[in-house]
Length: 469
Image (tube, rainbow, N blue to C red; front, side, top):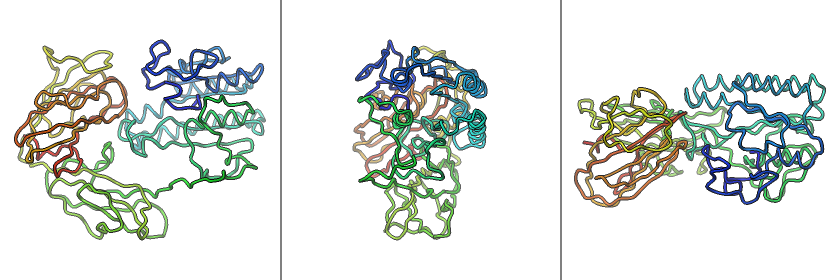
């Protein structure tokens, strides 16, 4: 967002990045020992320019050229961040002011993205940005000012980092001088376009190493670019009921009795669209079953659905893993919880005493009542019944690290300090019972774990309870 480029150019790969401990070096260095940022370029190209950086997340301070910034402040809260920025704005009239509000990210991790508490934090951010608008107008500089609002990620459940639109799509909003009013930007906008757009607005030259482009069509007197493809604009995807929508695997869940499932369109407008669905994990198309009445769920099912206008799909695809467990069956997985400090990777559990033990139906963080949410590790152990010999692929999605072993062989290594990240491994399994062990930890922030399987007639899905012993 501030470097006009992506990871392979600037080398900042995760929150673990430090200038003296990089893994991927930047392709070029700017005025400091890092890839050139918008802060450094303004300082280099505009004489005597005042620059302010106020940020609620203290880690941001290592990501720009400190010698380029006149006012460099880490705030204790979102309120203080805006207070400090506005005081400096009134006092110095800086050329560039960067304000970071961290409370929305915190609400996503603490309460869940899309929860009432999360949207309350979004409203709070809106009110704080409103204070900035009022200040700009009070200073009489609205005809000389561009306000750009964006984010670094979305989220699903209590985490982010996976390959879903909910996690990757973010807002891009501009207000102020020369910005078209009531205009929906029809072109793609990428995070690295932020810095390029700011450089364009200030009339400075973007470094050749940047790959971002200014969002020109959002400004007056600029037309749509030539040879432009329209951005895909999906209708809201269908909603399943019942279903837990907080999971990274979409809706669905674990059930203990036969259940009727409904599928509902989730969009405003008078036009009617057909809902097409499949129950075997395949992609719905125009020839798929049309939803007309409730679907009876009595065994494991991977349900997918989308809206269609004739033969054309017009929505993203909803996916749900519905799993059925025998209500009289004991939870087949045992687990042990361990507490640590400052976790960055999975420990060696040999010889350690757990602080809590129990049983679970699935290899999942959602089912556990953890003794605490951070610096905690869990070891799951169970047995899986393979009915057909062959090749299988196993997946873990976790925040933070996880490992999966089958018959004491490491199949999936998803260790490390990261957001929700999926990794997989393949293994050839004979018919019969095999031991399966999953290790998982959460160092800080949001947490997530689920484990999926695919192969030999089994569509990709969370390992169903029916396969566990």
